[in-house]
Image (tube, rainbow, N blue to C red; front, side, top):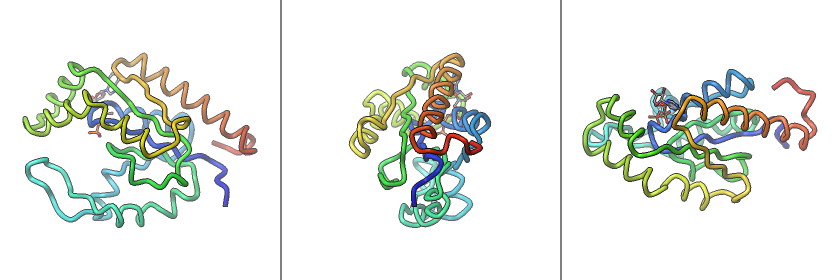
Length: 179
Ligand SMILES: Nc1ncnc2c1ncn2[C@@H]1O[C@H](COP(=O)(O)OP(=O)(O)OP(=O)(O)O)[C@@H](O)[C@H]1O
């Protein structure tokens, strides 16, 4: 069944601004923000807690099962620091947020991340790990890289995604539906 609303992934290194973008985007468009971190925790899609990395060890099959019905209906914004596990057939746009190293360092330090976790995330951003993952997993025309260092960039990014959504609805014959 064709979706009448698209599904969007907002991804990037932890601290780059995914939650900030998804919350604003959901408010402005009516699309549903699905925080995968919350799903993993509340629906127990994990195999326990990793003390070194201070994060859950995710059970990807269980996670996909947990969100499949909802996502297949369309109109979801998937917010996570990984993207390659979501089937291509589910996804219409992949937004990869980026920021510079100094900004990311400040944001993650403010969260009191331990040294291992902080360094791993900084390295990941420098190596463009998420951007590569997105480009390898989805068609290049649906992958968009956006800067998220300033509040102005956040606003511009939301405007761009909103404009893309309007266009998607026109192209898919759902422009008269409520967002
Ligand atoms: N474009 C931006 N301009 C200014 N501040 C930003 C921007 N994006 C994010 N921030 C700030 O950076 C911090 C981290 O943002 P946020 O929680 O949205 O990141 P995240 O990518 O969702 O992190 P995580 O993956 O850990 O959930 C917050 O304090 C937020 O206000």
